[in-house]
Length: 396
Image (cartoon, rainbow, N blue to C red; front, top):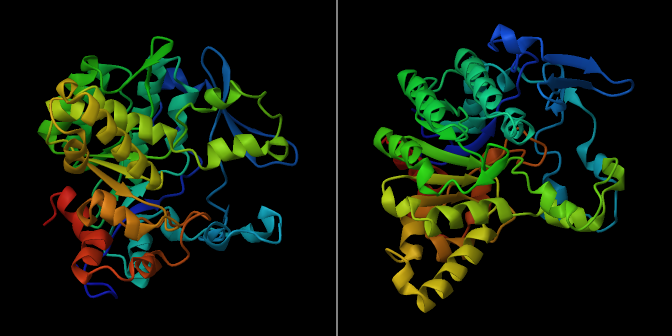
């Protein structure tokens, strides 16, 4: 283990892999394979479809050949767009894919050049699948398992104790979820991803904090797995559709829809509120959850709202909900958030550095995140840049 270029270990909570074209199909059971096909739409990139009880899009991109430049939109998000340039101008030209985006040995070399000692590694496409298959719980579990097999074969779940590829878990079927956790643990997983949002099953959804899901949370607590809730498709488009008709294309997206979707923190706010108010994090106090790529402002709002509610109805809570939050929940904020303010709200021990590399919305130079921590004591900077996540994954 190196000390990177900062003088202390650097652990990035938000790196991404780029999936190969067979990420869905390679380990899919034969009875499902005929339902998945790749189609080329004239003038567009290839699209992947899945046909079960209805035709659906699955996320697909030709990442093996071309990607957007890492951090291409950093200035767009950090400084805004005062002259009103088209967003595509910030993205620039599509560039050749780096081998480190798809292979662990090359990713280690890339991390060394960037001064990153360890990283959590998330899929780029697979995190959007649950919403598309929410009405077919059996198929959803099968698909997630096949993708986890692909992740394990390609990256492993613990590569040289430096890259921790994060498998996915759907809670839609309790028995199936527990079996999947056992499979992950047998292969050395230290963390898993659960989408922020309600759990789909039986044609409707429910809070993941309800007692019917306690066997899953008990298994997670007993195993010591870190729960990562990375921003994904949480199904909240249907909420926006209450207000206006869905657009036919991205070019027709209204400013109202963009405001609610691009800056939307409702899924992570609602999910953490549910886990606290429905008592999950009190029944299972050793569970640790990390909120990733949802920003940090929601945490300030939630803590304030919980405190107001607790002051009025303390008898309805088994413990101070603010204490529950700070014990169980950590936040990986956006680089555009007011990080100094967040330290004061949630504590330096509950903040994690995440770069979103190599996505265009992320940082060109991941470790440059430290520039936004200026003014904090060095001990707090070291915690945020790596110490906290090292502790959460029991790597001390």
